Image 1: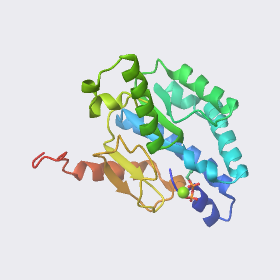
Image 2: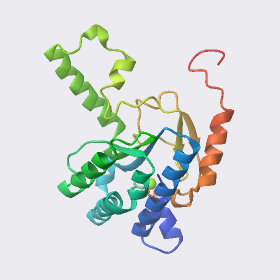
Image 3: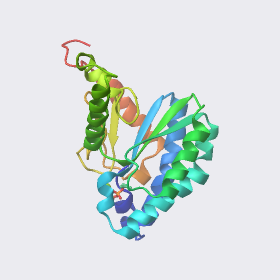
Image 4: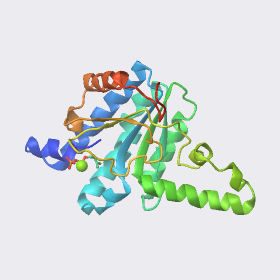
Amino acid sequence: MDGNGRWAIKQGKNRSEGHKEGAKTLEKLALHAKKLGIKILSVYAFSTDNFKRSKEEVDYLMNLLIYYFQNKLNKVCEQGIKVVFSGRKTPLSSAVLEAMDKIVKKTEKNEECILNICLNYGGQEEIVDAALKISEDLNKGIIKKEDLNRESFQHYLYQDLPPIDLLIRTGKEHRLSNFMLYQSFYAEIYFTDILFPDFLEKNLDEALYYYGTRDRRFGNIKS
Ligand code: IPE
Ligand code: MG
C-alpha cells in the first residue's frame, strides 16, 4: 500500500496524515473486494525493513494500527471477513500483539473471505522462517525429505494461503519490495502510479479488468 507519505506531502500535510488516509482507503477496499467476491486479500501494512524509519513514524504507524484494529476494523469483522496476520512477532510491542490477537480471535469464525495483513513482514524472512520450521520437523521425523515439494513448503509459510493471482503495486514503484515472494511466483502484476490513499474502488475494478485480460499459461504453451 505504497504512496501514503508522498500523498500527504503533496497536500502540504505531514506523512502521518497520509498513513491515516491510507488506513481509511484499506477499509473501503476490503469491503469492496468482499462485495466483488474476492476470497483472499493480502495487504502490506508494515515491512520488517520499515523499522529503519524514524522512531516517530514507526510509533505513529504502530498506534494507528492499534487504533484501527480496536475500532475501525469492526465493520470489516461484522461483514464476515476473517482477519489473519503474516509476519514476525519480534520486535512488535505487546500492545500491538494484543490488538492483533483480539481481532484474530474476534473474526476467526468468519467464513466469507480472508484479510491477510502483512505486518512486520518480509518475504525473504518468511522463507527463512519456513525453512527453520521444516528443519525442526525433519529432525523430529514429522515430515520426510521426500515429502518436501513446492506445495508442502507452502504449508510452512506464515499463513497457508494459495498462490497470489493478482498483485497490485501502487505509488509508481516497479518492484516487489520483499512482498510475498514465495506466493507471487505466477502472480499477474499490476503497477499503478496512483498513491495508495487515492486508490478507490473503481481503481480496484480497473486492476481486476486488467487481470481478466491476461492469458495465464503457468509455463505451459496454451492456457
Ligand atoms: C506505504 O506508504 C505505507 C507504509 C510503509 C506503512 P509510504 O510510507 O511508503 O509512502 P511513500 O512511499 O513515502 O509515499
Ligand atoms: Mg513507500
